[in-house]
Structures are given as C-alpha cells and as structure tokens.
Length: 337
Image (cartoon, rainbow, N blue to C red; front, side):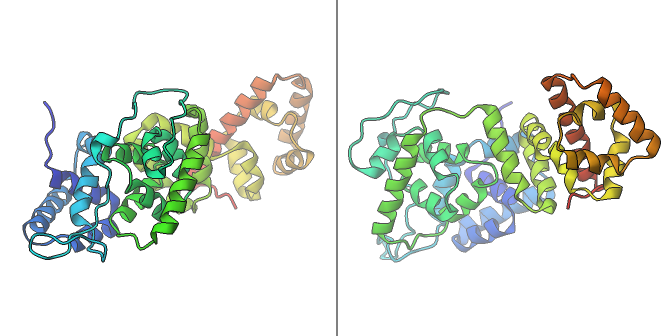
C-alpha cells in the first residue's frame, strides 16, 4: 500500500527529526490555518512516532520541503509586493524548473558542459553531485546561497548528495533570508562553479565512508553515538562501515594503562601477534608493559615465530582490534584520551 503524507505532514516530520531549532524557525514564518495545520501534524508525530517507511519517504523527498520553505521563509526587504500590498517572503528557489535539464542517472564520470558565462545558469548545468562536492566544505550559509539559485529538483538532489551531518544546517539556512550583497553572491557562484568543474568523477563508496569517518572523528565523542544511531536507521550498512573506520588500530596509543589492559583482555593472542608485526617500537613497548610477564614472554615468542606474516594478515588483525576497541569505547568501558 502506497504511503500518503500531506505536504504539511512531510514538513512536520522533517522538523520533528531535525529538532526544536528548526521547528521554531518554521513556526515564525507561519500564521493562521497553515500554522494550525503544522502544529497538529507535529503533535501527531509526537504522540504517534513515525514509522521507518515514513522517515525514509521524507528524507528522500527534499523537494517538497524546499517548496514549503518558500512559504515559511521570513519576510525580507527584497520581497516583492503581493496583491494586498504586503511584501511576500523571498523566494528560496528562483530558477524555473524547465531550466534544469541534468541527467540524474548514476554516472561515474561527468562531461564538461558548454559554459554560457552566466554562473547561475552554468551551475544548473552541472550534475548535483558535482555541486554538492563543491559545497561540502563551505559554510552552510554559502551553500544555501547557491541552492537558492538552483532549480527545485537540482537543489533537492544537491542537498541529498551532501554529507549527512551537513544537510540539516544547510536546510535551516534556506529558511533564513540572505543579507549578502549581490556582488559577494556572484563571487560565491563563481567559486562554486570553479570547484564543481574540478569534480570529474564520483568518489567510490569507500572514499565516501572514509570522509564520513574522518568527519565523525573530529566531533566531540558525546555527539558520535546519536549521529551514528540516526545514520543506522537510514542506512545500516553505511553506518556499520563508518563505525568500523571511526576507531583505528593506532588509537590504542591514546588509551590509559587500565583501558589498554581491558582491550588486551578482549583480544586473541594470535590476533595480537599479527597486529603488532611491523609496529613502531614505542607502541610495542607500550603494549608489552601492560602485560603480565608470562603473557609478554608468550607474545614475544609467538611474534618471532610469525615474523613472516603477510600484509593482508596484519591489516585484518589490526582491523579486528580496532573493532574491539570501537565496541569498548561505544559501551563506555574504555576511553580514548
């Protein structure tokens, strides 16, 4: 049975997922019947949590929320006069849909478009993946300035291709009228186009996973688990891949003595024997100093016997220890300094 959600319900569900800040911002731009409809939908999702199918539907359909954002954006001095003389809210997506004519099917390499000299029009010729890659390291406000000038479908797809952790921040900026001067905006468009043109092919899934793991490692640890949990609801395989790369073998150097002893107690001797091959002398000394005399002598003897371990064996062993470390860190049993 096909799931049906009204536009207001979809907006409410997205706001429900994004939290109070996004919800309060949306409320400020609505009044009357529209606000009542939103409040009722928010209450329904609070009282009756959404199903995973409903969540998947909303997360995969950003275009509807961009259109709704047109109605919820705050009024600005640049708004045009409506029929009753009141200033209308600024348009967030200003390019007619017919201008957008980009092939959205998966492709590995991108052909360079024939540039027109109009940065906005040329950006609309780029594949959304290329624009997303150009914007992923920019401030959310700058990304929003570009998205406002893209066709609806292009903007939706561009946001979809951006990293999971960045999307909500960019979306919130879309609901806030820009005060950046046209001159600065044009420079942003030019720079984005320049960066987008450098993206000639898609990154592999492994490269994307590495980037997400590196980004996650830069976040405070209390924020990691809820974000990984949310990612797991949307893409279990990707969440597991990111989690496996979030902790690395060389992180054991950051453990205190007691925490290292807990980790060693969870690792099989044969795994340690392989993993410690070819490591820095300081790391080996650190590990051995946290083992009993009997265990240390046994490990050193085994390492001499296994001195010809293959690189693949060593890498597999280190990955296994990293997974064990991840499990201990996620459960709070050990802490990386």
